[in-house]
Amino acid sequence: MLEPNGVFQFTERGFNPPAHGILRKGTVGEVYNVGGHNEMRNIDIVRLICRKLGKPESLITFVADRKGHDMRYAIDPGKIHRELARLPETKFADGLDRTIDWYLTHREWWETIISGEYQNYYEKMYGKR
Image 1 (cartoon, rainbow, N blue to C red):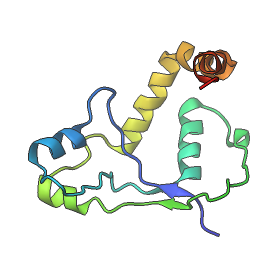
Image 2 (cartoon, rainbow, N blue to C red):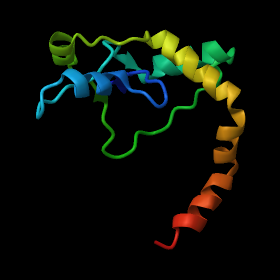
Image 3 (cartoon, helix red, strand yellow):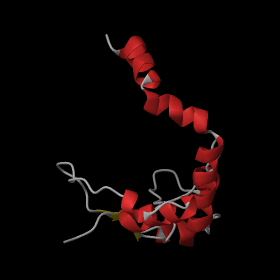
Image 4 (tube, rainbow, N blue to C red):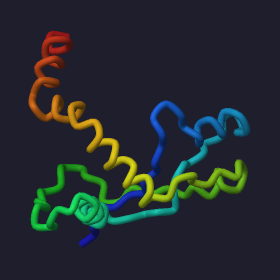
């Protein structure tokens, strides 16, 4: 059985170096795939997160795949590397650490979402459209 996996790219909020490089140096009409050469299984990323948080892997709950679920998200970023000399600026492990640290520092942001308050706001603003 295939295990779900993908290629992951860390991007700072508000600035996207790959997009900026494409706008400055890219050819109009060309397609540039952006990737980090770091294809990983989803379960391995979940295990890294557990380790970073000091949590046991026994907390991991497996669920059935949704219908139409892609088992693999993979791209070839060779063109952007060759033509625009674009390589990832942040290693995957560093980006994951920074992302986890952000969520730990901004707890109030995600607690509002999981509390249901966000869903109530969404329904109030957009529910009757």
